[in-house]
Amino acid sequence: MGTSDHGAALAAVQSTSVPIHDIGTAIYLSSDVFGWAGEWGWSNPFAFYFAGRGGMLGEVTPDVVSSAMGWFSPAAVAAMYAEGAGVAGARGAAERMAEAHAKWGDKYYAGVDGLDGKVAVVEEAVSGLDGSAIPLFVGWRQAPKSDTPAGRGAQLIQMLREWRGGLHLVATTAVGLSPLEAILTNEGEGQAKFFGWSEPFGDVSAIKAKHGEAEAMTDRLCAAALAGALPADKLPAFEAAVAAFRAALP
Image (cartoon, rainbow, N blue to C red; front, side, top):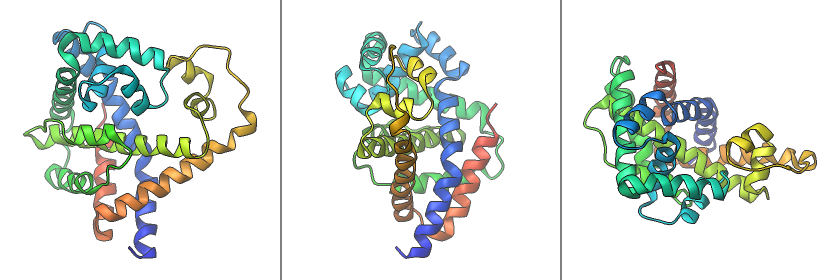
């Protein structure tokens, strides 16, 4: 990999990281997905979220799910995952989560211009990415795939979200931030409460700069992986695909 290739990959990572995060979060927490979950037996949508997402790891304990998700309070993960897995098992929940993403994609992505080509370049990237230390990404990559380009497009973007998120967890850990500190130095106390943590929260002003260090490290890790997964001449098409999928959000 030449210096120019790394620079192009870094630019692609920096231009797509926020859209990938936004799309993945929007699908995971969409009223569509929560509605389908209710039809399938999950009366608590957040129980479905934890079981469907964590179930990509297989039939594991809540501690394993907590370690892979990273920033949620372990107590919150344990409660929600156990409730959600109780409906159809962790693997059953994961299969439904993959199905829900396919249904969401069919609903919102079918009209994306040049859909087949956009899905193809994203799928090439996802297939070529290294999965070291990011088990949720690898679990999603092995989940049942949609037969439709629109459904598969939504699934692939979620895989990219787990890829970026997993590497960010590696980076926050590497710079010395605990899960709670990683939240407090970024989104703050409101997000910490949403993630299940309880007050009182400590003063993180002295370590706030570590968040920037972790973001920069995440970009470098993602750029190195993306440069190995896609040739430089396909990076513009990858960026265009992510932008198109972001624009198609309802």
